[in-house]
Length: 391
Image (cartoon, rainbow, N blue to C red; front, side):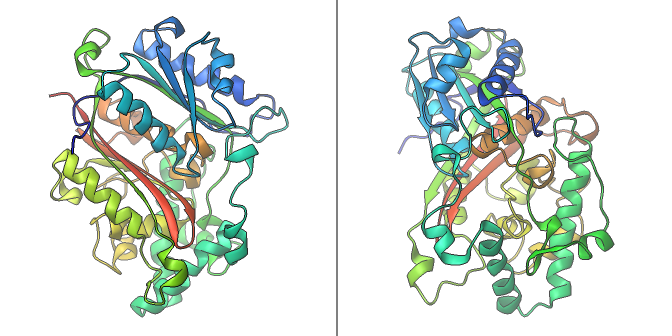
């Protein structure tokens, strides 16, 4: 089976600050992000041959906002994995030789200014079977925490220390990022004493849901050389869609996500990664809730099963640690972003690999990964992309 390794290059990216943006529509945010990407790449909309959009309900949102007259624009929807899937679809067309220069964009807009929402069909999140299982998402994912405690024989305090270390880390990283929603620091005492949302989740275990947009201009490596010297290459990609096994199999353990394991296997194989903890330099991953990040460590082979919290508490995934995770602040602090989440994560890795992240820069970063996850209990969609600097 063919892969896209070294067949797609990012030559420009843009990202708005993620905030309430009550005075801006989704179209406004898309224009801001896309024009930053155009300026970064040294192109404008007349150079764009096709576009892919995450968020809203139609590709016309992007086409009309940028006046991409008669250029094909496709809207992709895959819940919280939308951003990575948008990039995947666009990259496939470039790698396959159908287009030379294309635009990837995503947005979330749920404020007073209106416009097309960026969080799923008609802007509605997690309906139907999701709410039938355990209520809102916080209630759903809190069940993973209680099961994790039981499965590994851990106390409430032991698990909360690990989850708290993740939240504290992501707040700290977001505080260093001018485009993040939150600019604040918390300590373990504040984490433990926070209002309870869905036991054992407290306020700081849950991500923030602001508005924003992100965009990328991608092309072939051969053409990329004409635009800039520090373009970033797609090194590997993996995607997995679950089977609803968790809904019907009494042996399903509820402490890991099979979809992560399968998608990671594909991405690592593409990129030639044998030891991700040692080989990867930076990761931007899905942390809608702290337990998702904890499970990610274990599913991706970054920590032994049942030890993700210990690794987090030991600082393995901090800015100064062995493998920094969510250097932009993660969804916890930077903001979720709906259909744009996988793209604003890519923005962070792109900038890290170019050495342009200032106070949160990971020294010598040459290989990074993004991770998206969306769905409901028992079946998720996961998208992974590995990016690297040019040879």
